[in-house]
Length: 265
Image 1: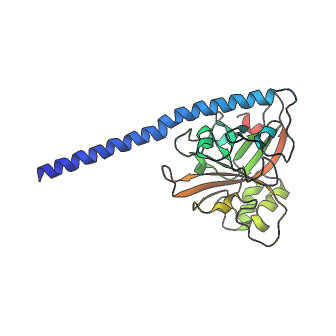
Image 2: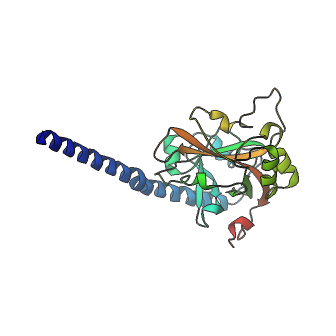
Image 3: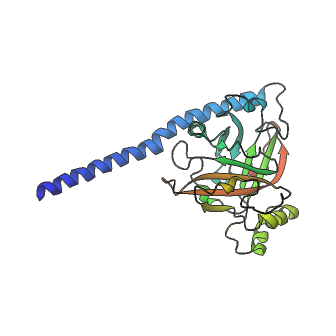
C-alpha cells in the first residue's frame, strides 16, 4: 500500500513539474521569441514608412502594395495602440493569421477589409504567450479606443456598447463617444444588438463578417468596423473572446504628432 502511495506521489510530482515547465515555455520562452519578431517588424515598418514616395491608397489592402504579392504573410503594415492598456501598449500588425504570422504579433484576417474601409477590419492575436498582445481584451469597456496607425493616417475606433439590454441603453452608451449619426447607425438596423465585448464558440466565424451576425436579404450601407479576436479563457482555446469597435474618425499622420487619445492626461 505504501509503495502504491509512493508511486502515485512521484507520478503526481512528475506531472506537476511537466505542467510547470509547459507554463514557463508558454508564457516566458515564447514571449522572448515573439519580442524579437515584433521588434524587427516594428523597425521594418518605420523604415518602409520613411522611404521617399511612400503612399497608401484607400482601398488597397492592407496598406502597402508589396503586401499583395508573394511572401506578404507576416509583413507588418500597421500599428495598434490601446490607450486603456497604458501608454506603452503598441504592437505592429502583420498580414495573415497563420501560426508563424501570430508569432510576430497580431495578424490581419486577409479576407476582411483594410484599415478604415467600410466593412470589418478584423485582427487575431494570442492571449497568453507569444507576446500576449490580447491578454486583457476582456477588460475593455464601451467607448474605449482602438487606435490604428497606418502609413498616412490615424484611425480611431471606439468599442461598441457592452451588456446593453435594449437599443436605448446601447444608444446612450454609444452617444458618450461617437458622433450622433454614427451612434445611431451603430446601434440600429443590422448593427442592433452587436456587443462590443463578447464570448463566442470557435466555429462562430460570422464575427469577422462585414456586418457581424447580419443575415438579412440586402447588403446594408456598411460602417467601418474593427474586430479583435483571441482565445478564451486564458490557457484554453475552448471559446473565442471578441471585441467589436466602430470608426469614430480618421486623422492624417503627421510627424511628431499623435491623436489626443495617445497624449496621456
